[in-house]
Length: 291
Image (cartoon, rainbow, N blue to C red):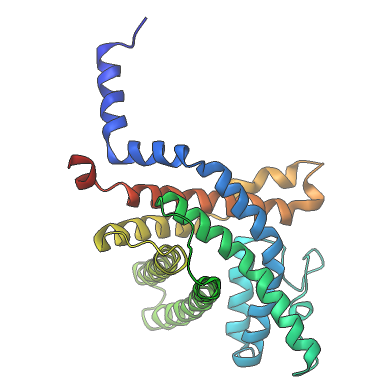
């Protein structure tokens, strides 16, 4: 027994639509498995990335207490309880610092950490290229590593910029609230402006992953649309809290001791799905199908 005509017509329209084609392409390219690989790589790359990032930040801008607190808040927003000074936090910030000055031991440690941190960028690169149906790169492997390093730097700068925007937003909000006597519309306007800046920063990071890390060259207008849409999802997740998608881990007696690890796996997997779906949408422009 076939589908009713109306349902069949709706299904046909969906399958032929750009979102429908993107979803089919995502499945055909084993998107779910690729996301699992990204999450697995991120789990082993995260400590190295945090160590390098926190060491560089502390050496350059760590004297600013407000910015230091904002950066830790950014990390806690995404993975609650991972880094902090509270009794329940998994890693204290000072444990992430490379110490000992410039010695051969330190240099070797930095190289090892850098290679470990770039593991997730390699998984991202392979996954993005798979969504764009780009064959594995045959060029210089050193150049590929440099592009991955550029993407890693963009991620770090994006998190730092988000922290700076957070500090600026709170400062401007306090000034506006004081000047206008606690005017709610003005305070909300500042908050919305801060959220908009966060979405823009997330969109820039997404575009950098597609362009720099993946080496894809989609249409500029499509890239802007996909990057902003992905940034909106990331911004909404940051606003409502990651507990929305990982809240069951704390309630599960088996997973509760590993809540931070489960959070990393689930969160990265979710964000990777959004990113790869956006890449699948970018790969399938309407004009190419119509030709």
